[in-house]
Length: 292
Ligand SMILES: [Mg+2]
Image 1 (cartoon, rainbow, N blue to C red):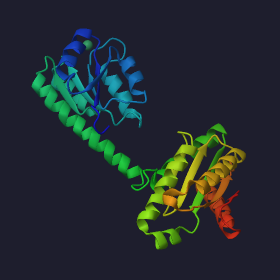
Image 2 (image 1 turned 45 degrees about the vertical axis):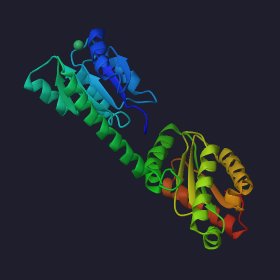
Image 3 (image 1 turned 135 degrees about the vertical axis):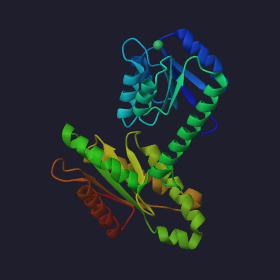
Image 4 (image 1 turned 30 degrees about the vertical axis):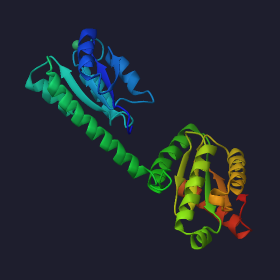
């Protein structure tokens, strides 16, 4: 988002209204348009979500209120800011709109300067909100997910796997002799090793896998839809890549434990425990190896 223009979605069944609004804001923002509520929902499900929606109320099919209600009811679309822009002028209309979670309510005809000022405020708040959410779920040094985020989302993933009877595997990785790196090469070098390893892990995983920094030099990867045999294969590849990576010219190895969820018979904490036990056994029996 930084350095990029915020994305605003204009929704109105009258193309002339969209054109008018677009004319006011096109220099300062990226714009997408929809001429129905249904189309608006579709665009909000896309990878690049709008930061703000200017939403008409009176439309054939789904009206603006229904669109707003639906967007606010889903965690993935709830953060999108919604500003109603409508010809409906009564107090009740405005009250309804705001009670549904819209951040603002403008009546047509809009005054361009007011529209722009309000958009600016809401876009700024939205971007700050996104930044805070991102900070809360990521580890500052490596930009991987943090422990808190992993634990939070793991419970959802495990519940889903149970429902769909699909496999989940977990990998725990601990850098060997990390304290020695910090002690002999300094903390700057230690941090560089952590960062480079985080990048390597991210490259070896699919987008849907959760790669997290679990503790100091400990990392966890949660593989969705993945049996033990596949997870062990990936773990072995990761172990070999780390051994070859020489970040900052430092020879680094890691010990890795892998386990698959015993679906229906255990929760996430038991799964972590088994992967952790395997990792400690890998440490105890010589390090730089994968056990499961
Ligand atoms: Mg309309």
